[in-house]
Length: 340
Image 1 (spheres, helix red, strand yellow):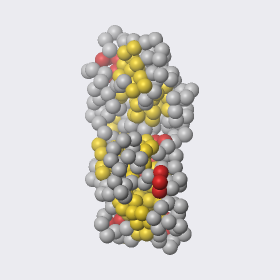
Image 2 (cartoon, helix red, strand yellow; image 1 turned 180 degrees about the horizontal axis):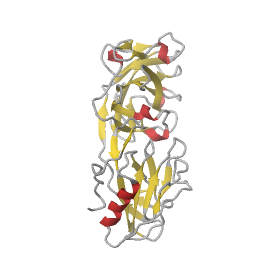
Image 3 (cartoon, helix red, strand yellow; image 1 turned 180 degrees about the vertical axis):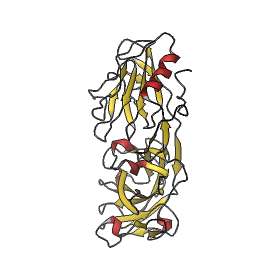
Image 4 (spheres, helix red, strand yellow; image 1 turned 90 degrees about the horizontal axis):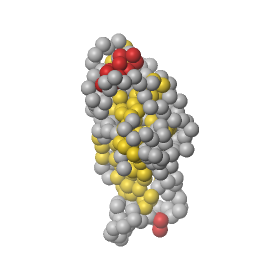
């Protein structure tokens, strides 16, 4: 069995792992490790059965070993590690058994992963084997790996009519005719929520919510938002909140805040292209942001699941907030959800 293939988890099922809302069987660590070691003839790999993560950037003090690195815990503030110091021809393995995706950076600044200098690899919390091969040393080094396949969901374009001087909050998922503007409730869940258990009540109605059919559920890894908001529209930028509702096996639906996108921190502008009047999504100088979900993850872990859970689907909706200082205009947003 080559190392760049996935371990066959259908063998010797001994336990069901349900903590992240995904139901699948896994082998014992010893069986998994033996499979890996058997694939490298004559090799014995060192095992770190609890690689401790630290931070969220390439400044992380955590560093993996050459061998098998098993991750058991990751949080939104501690989810990063670095590869070992590069030695051409050597390889290292990661198995993420935490509840959120983790980030793996080169060993030092300037290193490459799949040809991207100072890039990172995002490993999903799926308990599968991911192998990194060192292709260049000495420092800073270069590495290759095979990322998991990524799928993408695109929502219909969301349009929000805004008047300067008053903040606009728009609720919905882009279904024409179903948008809630500046509702009166003091809390978001006073105006948009799901209640019930087997028979569900959607507020304001089911058209304001969306659910996918993935079964088992998949992990949200990246949210991409593209807009027609430009620097000329104001210094304060939009905020895109994501809300999730699902049955947590307690007999009823629970409504949660989830990972979102704040254009005020780290948004980029399109460098070249046409400029319409008024501006359209993708025109030069329009804002966009690509947001890894694990960097803004909001507990519980299930809020970053998409699809069918143990007791219900994971329903989600968006609240787009246009600041009062923004120019009078109809703002447009294209939202993409990437998942593994």
